[in-house]
Length: 152
Image (tube, rainbow, N blue to C red; front, side):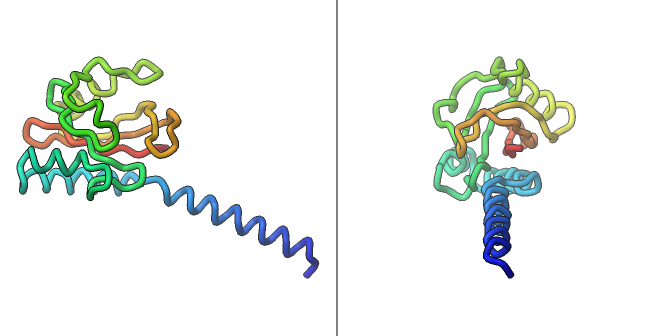
């Protein structure tokens, strides 16, 4: 094999590995849904105070790469947020993404009407710091909405 061919093969291999590593940095839809279910079970077993503290812990079991748990009440108040503690305790029902989507209203409506589902919008990625397309899976648990999203 020529040196040029070997070099090109190494470059292509490195680029392929880089893409694989970047893909591993993002959570999947199945992982987001599993995290919501795990959070719901944890909430039921441990109560709100302990659960919200666990959900808010940036190094805890409910934070994995760009996946994190968020909790809202049925009026749009944020009760827990694994990526942005500044949102906790705020009425976010009027929060819009850059395209004008009322994302928390969508969370509430989906939870009320279907019990669970996916909502698409734009949101800052805590890993990349860029506004990216996001899809969040929400599930109604008693009078709460637990969500976890994936960046696309």
